[in-house]
Length: 103
Image (cartoon, rainbow, N blue to C red; front, side, top):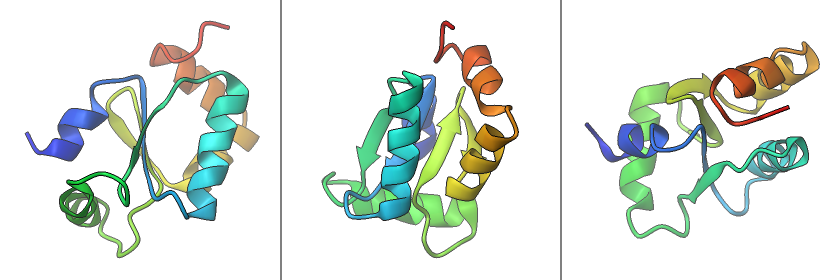
């Protein structure tokens, strides 16, 4: 099991991010506003960040792998997918099912 997969399965919500990324900030802010205590891994601040970024690029198949959001240990996607789920009313139930919300 690679480091990304292992980290992604350790909490109900895991976000791989870069501290200077505005899209990452938006996703992290949304989870905070919803009361979700997401595990956030800032790739530019982690000593193994470059290794994790390479694994995410391979997993996601795109050059810019952040933000990468895992809910319930499963890759959900990036900002566009999270916002689409939220605006469609499907994010909160997904978070509840993963044990990230107790509403």
